[in-house]
Length: 307
Image 1 (cartoon, helix red, strand yellow):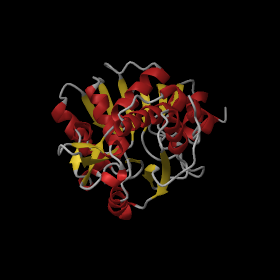
Image 2 (cartoon, rainbow, N blue to C red):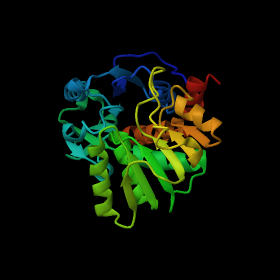
Image 3 (spheres, helix red, strand yellow):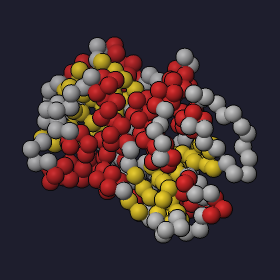
Image 4 (cartoon, rainbow, N blue to C red):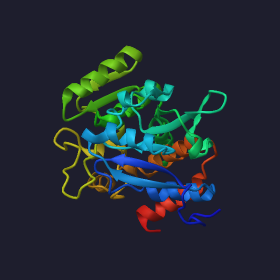
């Protein structure tokens, strides 16, 4: 299957995009455009730097321009919840939106993906928010690190959009102990209280563990910049006490945290698997077609690793 477009952009080309702040590190355009080309869709996937203050306007703009859909990355996943017209059960369950599908009413008055209709036949539209991150993170943890989450002990760094979704998903997978650490402790406390209400059988503690853990997971953005400090306070927890370390950041491919974890003898993985699976699901939601996952994986790895 092709990984590059066989025809140029024309007047009926449709668009989708990712919004973030920052966004220049994103590998989503390379991955999604490869998937789109393989499916022979006359679409293009773009990336835009969108400040949080302008998110609502940017979503409204894409809706007005009849975009197929959007992906949202840091720091927009929580902010977008009240900005979409309809929330899918996945967004309601995990409390964050990372994928938006624009929809229109067909001749029968049914809401359908806007991609199913010619742009010149689209009138009334709405935005439909989904979360494809939750399933993507657990699939990546199992495939890339071989982590069995059932009864595991996990240290999670970060309580933003990605951190909240991850904490709730880990709880639903039946971890035994979950330690939450965040710069603003109250955010971690709020998530802990929510998990205790839904999963009273799980031990949820705000703060670093005193014992070893099966998994340390970074859901913060610390590591995107070369000047960033480590998200882990090594005076509170030593990496040698983590059997495996997962960093959601994928560019750079090896963050300072992952480099230190390797030296400490931990199994390590970056966030490329999570990016792949959440993106593939988004493409399926927009197109109604099965995503060419292996093609998307190949292009993604080439983009990040240069292989």
